[in-house]
Image (cartoon, rainbow, N blue to C red; front, side, top):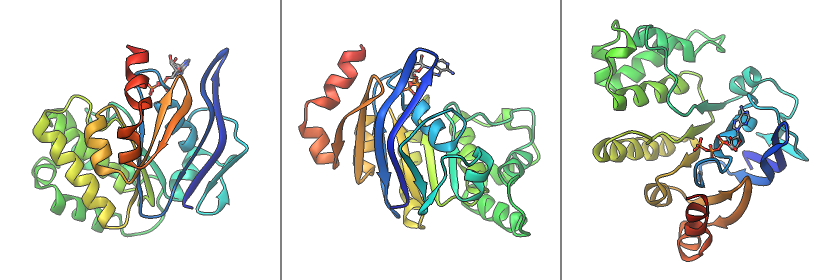
Length: 235
Ligand code: ATP
């Protein structure tokens, strides 16, 4: 297993936001985490990244216990999150945003990797010296993903990447996720777009009020009633 969490919990004071979650991602997999607003999806990803305080019976990445590792060290070992809402630096240039993604790296291939991003995304290349504020929502999401790629991830965790994108851009985004996965990247995908996420992932988990209420293949999750209930329950 690439990533394994066993009995993971996140508490904000008395709010037990992530409850006894056990989850795994194998090498080469796309795994999705589904659930309504407030189900605890972002808290789960932040706990895995190390930016939210958590307790767990076990938290392993690439076979090593990472439970006491800082977020920065987790990034350096290849566990990289693309946060919800993209969180790019709109006043910085596109190029400087990409450089930020490489802040943990010590090697000399950063410039080469940035050129690789520009080849993949000509829209970003054309705007490399402009502030990121000129980018469209879809381009900003590409920039956020590219910035994460600059950290040389082994496992990329994406928090609701399709949020706010038009249907065409959502399709492009999911094509990109599949292409990155084909290139060898493992992916943990938090989504509210259940339909697209289940089309793309090989396995998934459904969170409801911080708990895993269903897990399995896309077919198993579509056939069960937990998926619908998780959303209706929160509505
Ligand atoms: P969304 O899709 O709205 O982001 P989510 O499934 O990602 O929802 P979380 O954002 O993880 O859910 O929130 C889970 C619970 O934890 C909610 O009750 C939320 O109010 C609470 N929560 C999240 N972040 C904090 C925080 N920093 N401090 C206190 N409570 C928080």
